[in-house]
Amino acid sequence: MPTDRRTLLRAAGAAALAVPAGAMAPRAFAPDPEALLRDPSAICRTAATAGGGAYAAPGPRRKLKLSFNANSICTVGALVAQQRGFFERNNLDVELVNFGGSTDQLLEAIATGKSDAGIGMALRWLKPLEQGFDVRISTAIHGGCMRLFSRKGSGIESVADLRGKTLGVTDMAAPDKNFFGIVAAKLGLDPETDITYRVFPADLLGEALKRGDAQAITLGDPMAWILRERDDLHEIANNLSGEYADRACCILGIRGSLLREDRAAARAVTGALLETQDWVHANPEEAAAIFLPNARNTNAAQLAAMLRSHTHGDHPHGHVLHGQLAAYIEELKLVRVIRPNTNAQRLATRIYADVLSEAPA
Image (cartoon, rainbow, N blue to C red; front, top):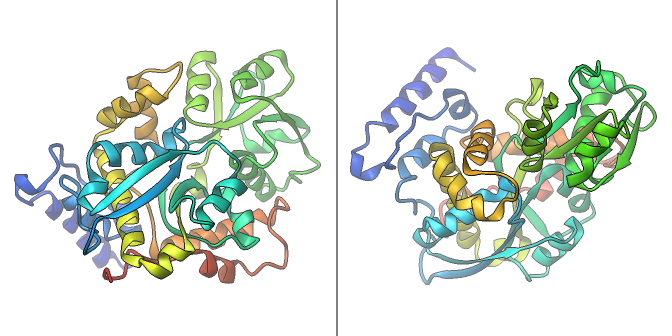
C-alpha cells in the first residue's frame, strides 16, 4: 500500500479524536492505524461510537431476533448493544436468543426465519454454508479467542511439536481444532495422521493435560484464558499468531430472506454491532462488567484482559472480509473439511453480503 495513503489514514485516525466532545464517546480512543488500513470506515464508526445510530434503518422500528451464545465472551457485543442502546439508536427492537444448539441447528433457525441473524465462528460455519443454508455473512466481529496450550517444560513449544502427540479438543468439528490443524498442515504435518485427537468436555481439558491423557489442548475463551491462568499453562499459539494477526474469527450471519426483503434492517443490525465492537474496544472494563453475569469462575478484571487481547476494534468487511473468507475456505481443504474441488472465491462471493458499503434502502 502506498506510504502516502498510510500517512493519510493515520492522520484521519487522529482527526477522529478532534470531533467535539459531545459527539464522541466518554472515553475516546485512537483507532489502530493498521486496522484503519484494512478497514478505513472504522474512522467514521469511531466518531459515531458514543451515540451510535449511523446505520439506522429508515421508517418504522424493525423487530429482529439475534441468536448468540450468552456464555461466549466472543459475543459480548450482543449484550452490550442491547444494554447500551446501540440497537435502539439504529431503529431496531432486537430480541436476544441464547442459542446452545449445534451450528447446523443455528443456521437452520436463521435460514428458516426462527431468527433473523446470529453470531458464530467462521471456521465452524463455512462447511454448512458450503452445503447451501440461506444465510449470508455480513461482517466479521473480531479476531482472537482460540488458544493452544501445553504444560510448561513439556517440550511442546510450537505447533510443529504436535507431531506424534495427542491433542485434547472439545469436539471434532471445533473451530480451534480446525484452526490449529490448518497451521500444522502448513508446517508440513498431516493433521489427520501426525496428530491424535481426543475429545473432552471443556471443563475437563485441564485435567486431561495434567493426567497426560493429552499432551496439548485447545479451546476458546473464556475457558481457555481461565485454564491458562489457573493451571499456569504455556500458550503455544493463538489465532492471532503469525500470519493470522489480522484475520477475524467471529462473524455475523443474516437470513437470506431478510436481505432480500429489508436490506436496510440487515444493514442496521450489522452496523449496530460494529458500533458496539468499537465501544467494547474502547471500554473493555465496562464491557466486562456487562458480560460478568454470564461468566463462571472468573472476574471482571480477567474478562477485561481477555477483551483487550481480542481485536474488537478490527472487524473487516467488504473486499477484506471476502478475501479472509476465501482464504479460510481454501485452508479448510487442508484439514479435509471443505471439498477439494470447491472454488473458494466463488463460495466466498455466494455466502457474503456487503451491506455496509451500500446506502440504506
